[in-house]
Length: 86
Length: 214
Image (cartoon, rainbow over all chains, first blue to last red; front, side):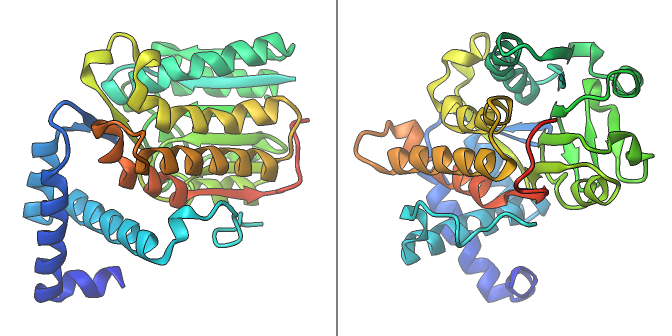
């Protein structure tokens, strides 16, 4: 699914627009540490706008989060949907 | 039993991991575990392998930057990678609080005889507020991300099985997520919920799910 989104320019544009809109609502006084980098709101917006590797990862995070909100998965408290791997 | 901890502190993300590992270090000490605490510049490859060969730790709690095939320490020196002689870690449990290392390093450790591996198949993310940079344990945003991750180790130290340690961490992350989505949440907390969701979805357990520290 991930690759097909990024190969489809129309889908990529929609996901980019959605992610940018949501990131713009973030507070200015926080940071996120992702790997060895620390990112401000404007850093995150820059990565998503450029659709670089980190930007794509943030778009996928946002998409998966919204899908989980819509499906109600986010409010479940069991682990049957995400079992530990034996 | 011995617990080996790496906690470099050469950048902001690692500094948060360094400080948030302290409560777990203290708990393990209070429970009578022997501790090999490789903090700061001691979190290097030479010392880690020396300690592992000598002490054969039951648990390695590794904080630092990671890739799919490795985990790093001070100044991002690679400490363990998938093509190392991983049989030296036979019967050990691992919690790698790092990005990506559950993709290849975790399976390689398990196939080489490690008992348990808990880690992340994508980025491990910490939300934080720079005003707390010098007092990370007081950062209310970082607490939502790091307190539940500490539960992996504290649960294993208390004698829980791997699956119970994993579930306790998952449960605590989900409880924090619900708080972040509620009307009780601060502005800062609410807008970082999707990062915590990513940590929830990408934390996995490999190996003996019924295993305990031994």
